[in-house]
Length: 344
Image (cartoon, rainbow, N blue to C red; front, side, top):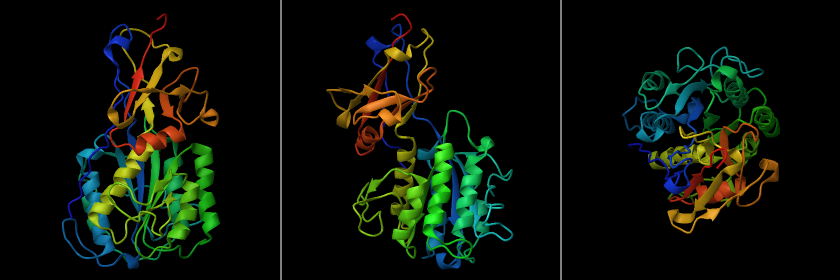
């Protein structure tokens, strides 16, 4: 099935009469860098190549990933890819899993869209067990490495699996804690995508440590994204890998990862006064605009709030979690950032 991705509608424009010295400046969503860890266990089913329609979870998964990596909706993002299990890789420290197969250098990302992943996806086949501990330590090792945390971008990990943890440490709380310690240390989130065969209750426990935002069970035109009928969850259920469902999950993950973090606007008309910035939200993209409340940090967040990453020298504008949830649930949301210059 053809995978397509339409970027979510998000607008961060500056009105002319409020611009710094009447010059337009735009706050843009930060681009995303993702390290994808793909389960190649035998339970993923029959092998295939990109473009084939074999009725297996593996075939649907690699076609969905290939299409995403080549899609216009991924433009400007970066991706790296690895698989589990791998011969000689370590569960205890993630060695082998914590470097990428693509790009071949083992670190860094391929700028999307790109077809460079296809040869790698074609060369692998589902035939291993499911050492989830190694995969998670690989994600935290790769995304935690300084060279893979690029300035001005958001870094995330994505685990895709159809099974329960095997070999290594299989305790769900221990696996959750691997991701939680990583998030606490770095602020980097890990997203968990489950397919038929996985225990979604167990995946939800693990995903809790990844600190991905909660989402509704029915979202983006697809149903049962939580896999167990729960009202909200942090993991994603894509069933047998149906292309449309997989596409929507990746679309929603991208939106939730970057949809509420804006790069601080710049203007050639003067130096922006961070104390004279207004952020407004237009529900459904129409007036009247709601002026959001600036708070000092995430800990001080209110329902309609926003804050800087650094109050003294801000580089990002971040929406508070409750406001972020409202924006992401609104497909036509518009967020306007109005600037004032020093002395204005």
